[in-house]
Image (cartoon, rainbow, N blue to C red; front, side):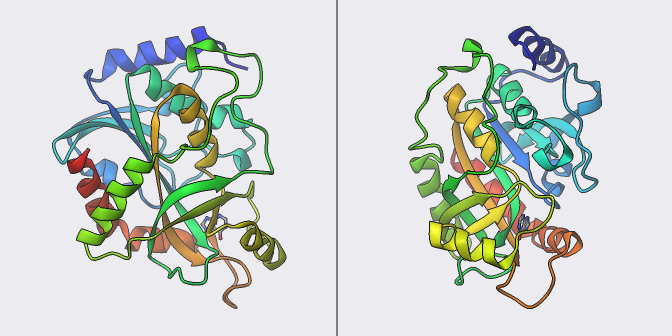
Length: 272
Ligand code: HPA
């Protein structure tokens, strides 16, 4: 279990390598890494160099933090994240969010590839997250209370910031994308869900399903950062189509949608 001092050391190390002043963080999900390759004035720090940092083991995640500029805004991009299914305690999946907080980030954009649970979602759509369901894992902020990161008990009713959602939906509309928002259900993986699990999640109010993001949104809420969540719908969730689910298909769709996704992110950043 990391202590406040460990996080401070990590932030001190990264802060010594990148320019100051970025108030926006972006976490890139599976197959969506291209955004980090197109930043102006990039400065890269590998996760493996950062003291106390958990390392990304999913090969579709690059595992580096990139400072740079996009749409005229200074951003810190996390190209790759760690997941509970890699064997990390959920607290580790929140590590990079806490790092962003200590580096001065106030707004974080969380992105992911997700399965579509709502029947009206099509493969390749973007979904703005309005809320989440999180039943099957530990809290990422469980354990000894670290006051540096906020109160022990904290509100989650605006975890996906309402103003940011409005902004994202209006950019989607401007760009001719379906402007849709919905609830993201976390499942721990790494196995994809069963059709019965997806039917149950639908009854509970889920529109999309995935294995990331939620721990980060919780850690961000505790620190008082504003969060925007965007899913790229990479497949119909289990049982909705007859095709067996595969990680390769998930990544392929995310990569195919990269250009549109980057345009969407840039549109959002330009209005922040
Ligand atoms: N389920 C869980 N995680 C996912 C999926 C899915 O269908 N697609 C992309 N990530």
